[in-house]
Length: 373
Image (cartoon, rainbow, N blue to C red; front, top):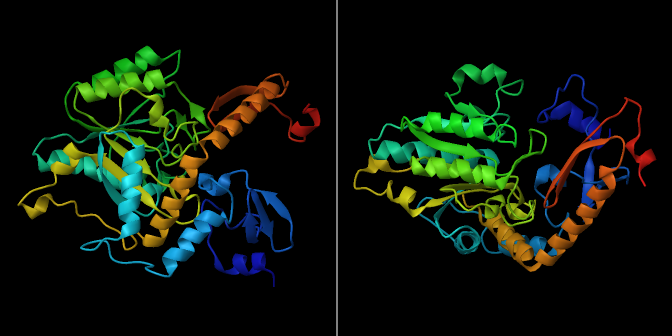
């Protein structure tokens, strides 16, 4: 029995209808941009292993950092204890993020770092006895699959069975040239009653919605309104962070900076799961009290895992020393985009940094590659 058959008899895969799905491809190893299955076939990892892999599979520098960490400390509880890899990673992240960011909270993945951010924002107001409970998000958003993350995402087939359990969210349209004035008016109307706790957004690109892109100047206008009304702004940079948009963070394109950042995916270069939520000193101080009920009661067994932190430290080091390679990749993709624009079957081509997206006008049996120059 091969690996795919053994898998089929045992494992329940994500986002998969097990009754009708094709057998899962059993990958035995990877190198660079390539994956290899149990029969030696090669695959280009064109989705970067769910947008996590930045420097290729089996990157030797990140692998060496993890191996070295294995010899000293694999894990320790992060309540009441700390360790050097987490401290170094916090220092590195705060150097990269806007100067408004002051504190780092560790979790496990993209959904959990969003969950942490939402709970931080809600409890920030609760700790001050201020009644602010409304959350604003964009339509078509995706922030993860835990309950808080689902609540601020698009309602549909992925979460319909749980809809009655989700908290209420005010959704506004993604801003475009055609609707920006209406979006600003809708947003202003919601925040004017001073009941809005937070505004969460995927900066400049909605990934799972289909790489929907919008202008930094429009997001800046929304952040300006939010901050004028003391609304906590949460940037979900889980997908857009660590160079994917051409800058270290998508919010680097903005004039107004968020209060909370959610980071995951590429943070470890695709090696190990890690989530990070950062916040301003003002938010952090709202949890400091002689009253222990104002404590942020949130944690995970593998919070601040030393192996994941070691991978992240190595990955960030590579990112900082390979900015020129990032620019070369963007230039190459810009040339590709220019060629694709004239293709008769391509429409709505858009690009931001390393992200190029387009729609294909095609019949079911049409092969796009046959008309490529």
